[in-house]
Amino acid sequence: MQEQRGGNFGLREEIKAYWSERAATFDSHPGHEIGSAAEWRAWHALLTRHLGPGQGRAALDLATGTAVIAHLMDDLGFRVTGLDWSEPMLEQARAKAAFRGRDIDFLMGDAEFTMLPDASFDVIVTRHLVWTLVDPPAAFREWRRVLRPDGRLLVIDGDFVSTTLLARLASVFERARGWMRGGSGAPDEEAVRLARAHRSILERVPFAQGARADRVAGLLAEAGFERIEVDMHLGPIHRAQARRMTFFKGADRLIQHRYAIRADMR
Ligand SMILES: C[S@@+](CC[C@H](N)C(=O)[O-])C[C@H]1O[C@@H](n2cnc3c(N)ncnc32)[C@H](O)[C@@H]1O
Image (cartoon, rainbow, N blue to C red; front, side, top):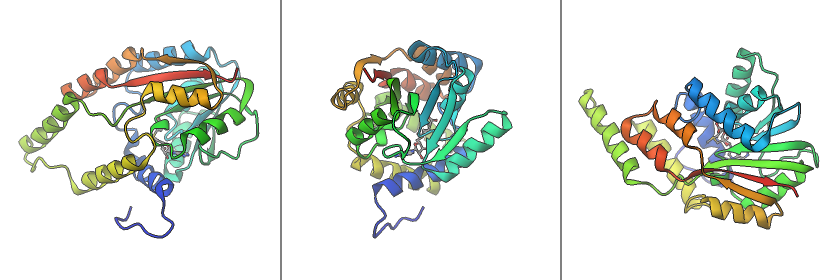
């Protein structure tokens, strides 16, 4: 990604370019791809708790990335379509599905304006998209349009803006570890540039103060969703992820504001 952006290179393109650059290494970060049997079980339990068994129902994984959630949904018997606007992410997703022999459809598209037919999915699931939506109210109305009348939405997201003391300690620890291994302790240029791009995007999205569950739930209600439930019980997932992280990062994972929100069409 170049530093200089001009002309029509808007926020949406910046978000797309940012994730495209991260596609190749996305799955290597604990907290992205599933890292243990305990984490698989915890994710299956969360999805089953809110969505029930798939039984061939049509599910759309919005902003599928490398298809982590799409695979979980496929495990549970949903007929899964993964949509993302980043071609490098979709390449990873397609390769992984082929490698694992999974029959998952992938589509290039914008989650805020999917171009999909009305009432075409029983379930929409989306992890870690909402916090960077450029127009959340319009996106939520679009998701209602695509869901069938008895459909259900499951949003898995968090507040990735408010940093905790533990997150700051984690970053000091990472630097100290790098220094002890003989480096300067400073993150490499590439990491600095990506962190800067991330910060810049975050400052300009509507959830710049963090996508808190109550605010997201309020906007879902305004868009017309009903029976909205916020689930903060993601502990088993986070504990499994924390085992693969450094002490401070893992401890931070356990106290961050992360949630699942389920919402029905009626
Ligand atoms: C943090 S990654 C999450 C990927 C995946 N949902 C997961 O949880 O592993 C964010 C993904 O959202 C995609 N994305 C962001 N905004 C999007 C939009 N408006 N339409 C489609 N994809 C979008 C990015 O390309 C990226 O793949």
